[in-house]
Amino acid sequence: MSYDPTNIFAKILKGELPCHRVFEDETALVMMDIFPQSKGHTLVIPKAASRNLLDADPAVLSAVMPLVQRVARSVQSATGADGIRLAQFNEAPAGQTVFHLHFHLIPAYEGQNLGAHASGRADDAELAELAKTIADALAANAA
Image (cartoon, rainbow, N blue to C red; front, side):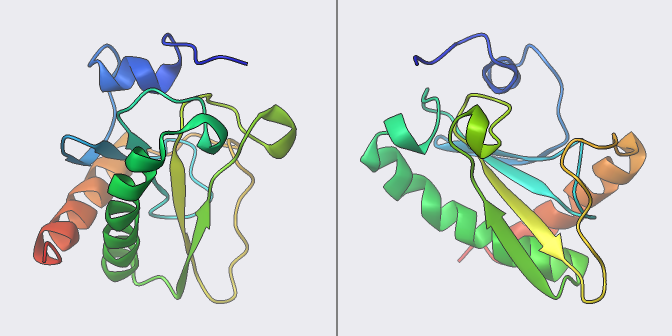
């Protein structure tokens, strides 16, 4: 299967669709998942066009993984989560629904089950507030 440049994340990266932006640099966009599995569910989306991990350029992966780690630390700090789940899906049978490489950082809270993926849209005001809180934590952890 090939990369479709009209996927929703490609449109967000081009500025054609809105998002709750946390951070952006030359390698990736960090934004809130609008269908979160828990409070603070954040996505890291490499800017390079690839369908998923299976066709990604290793140089892109090498460049983006330190950011994934920084964002994970910042999400945990900003949300007070007890842990962070990192998820990345490759093709529909594995659960991929948007065919542009992306990484889910899902806060885990002791005693709380994760919600089902894409089961309900989050409140935009809450997402905007979380995006700012996480962005502030990311800026504080810039080193």
